Image (cartoon, rainbow, N blue to C red; front, side, top):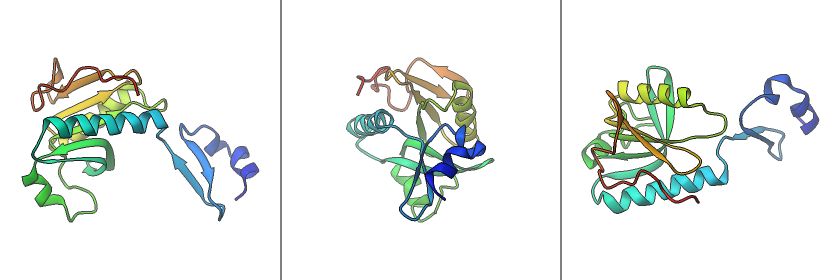
Length: 159
């Protein structure tokens, strides 16, 4: 496929992702911008500084009732990590799943994804908007702060 074909394809035109072609003409899609990745990194570092035990990982695949979903950042206990570390996608959600909002994602889509994580066993679901505001949820709804990491800030500095 060449670039002109990509631009003319009505299916590809409206995707909320950056579309590129590899040297071999293969389509690659990158849904995350630099600010998105920077927020993922910042959230990961903050969780690691506050939670000395367990694992904090990015782009974590989780089996849900709607196939595999990938959380931007997760924290899971060492006990749970030992159970899932050899899987291609975790059959159970980590204790904390975090999503950084992208321009192509609505709040409703993110909350739906959070419900899928809760169904799969997550204890908390967090969202981070483009300004660094963190919203915390458990399966009952919105929280004032994280129960599992109460010192995690409600806002992280813009990257």
